[in-house]
Length: 83
Image (cartoon, rainbow, N blue to C red; front, top):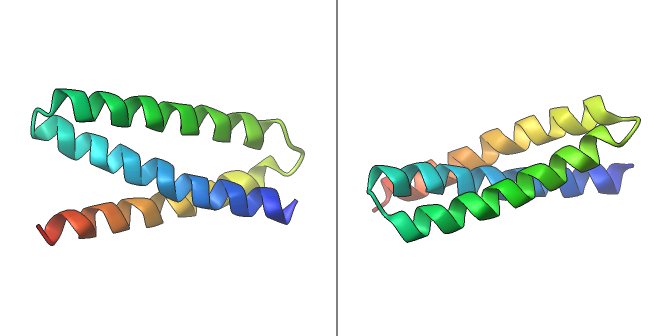
């Protein structure tokens, strides 16, 4: 159970990092980059949903995913501010 939660946590960081990158690339009108980021984001997002809702401990996994989304967003926006 804990390994699955950790996998969802780190996948959530990556997924939100990609989503924040997608938002930034859309604002900059980067068509190809935003398309690749959206496809990557959706694949990870749907796999996470399948893992979380197919498990009896889904609430704990969703909570872990939620925290990871905040962490991923923090790192992506922080990286963008450095440019």
